[in-house]
Length: 353
Image 1 (cartoon, helix red, strand yellow):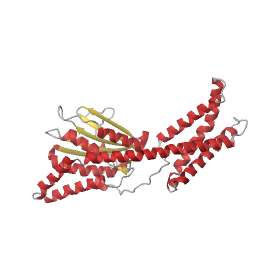
Image 2 (cartoon, one colour; image 1 turned 135 degrees about the vertical axis):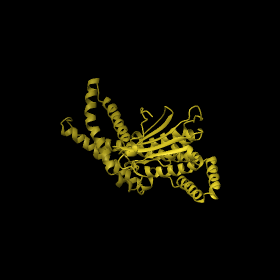
Image 3 (tube, one colour; image 1 turned 45 degrees about the horizontal axis):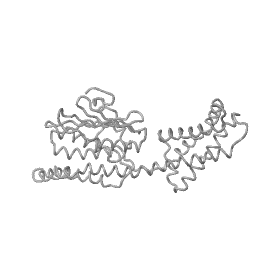
Image 4 (cartoon, one colour; image 1 turned 30 degrees about the vertical axis):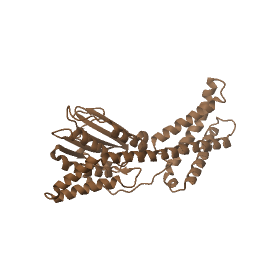
């Protein structure tokens, strides 16, 4: 299989440092959900652009020409940009403390820090001798107002994430526990009860584990190792159904196991690989799952061979669902790509550690 823009060989991954079986993954500790999360690159970028747009418009009020507008823009930017970056850094550093406060106190602290950031920006231009008169009160008021608007945006984004996540979770639940999948699994278990009772018991345990995760309380994010275990249970069920037609290859990097991603996001990709790779092929297919940490990024790949001239093309809803949920959690730091190259279909996810 040749390497392309998003496709690469798996031979290097089994020898990655720290790779070991799924059963040796660490225990999961649930993280606290934060509303004021300014530690993401996308949030910082949008906040800076928003404040810069305000500065550009404000400079128009004192400009009599393009030259004076440029001068005013430079002065205001020298005060506003350090102030907004200082506010974003402070909120990021105090994320845990803010998460323990009541909502109204979170707002109060954020707005107060905005006022302090405004004073900081004004102090910079005064210290540099750019302003001939002090605007301390106006700067503090402007900083508080901008901070309130940014906090409102963060709160709105957090609220928008909840119904979207719930809708996506229900869609994944319907996609995974389809009636024919459940019936096929139960029929396989019935067929094994007399001849191989131990294998039938293992099959039902895997099914029980799938349902337990599907019906558990919703979480914003779970560790990667937990998603890998869920995919392992699903593949164990399908292995009984397809036998030698389903070949599974794992290449797991332990260093990537703590990366966080939306719950129930990996299993639909694995199911998609089985549905479009193994099910329509009389000789079966190979499903490969790999994880690898590359600096501050974790790369997750799910690939499957595709039978030539067979199989029904999907509508892409499962892939779109995964893409949207990944964007909700990691914003611009999360990447999702898919491609079909030389009879191999691959989905590639990149998430921050």
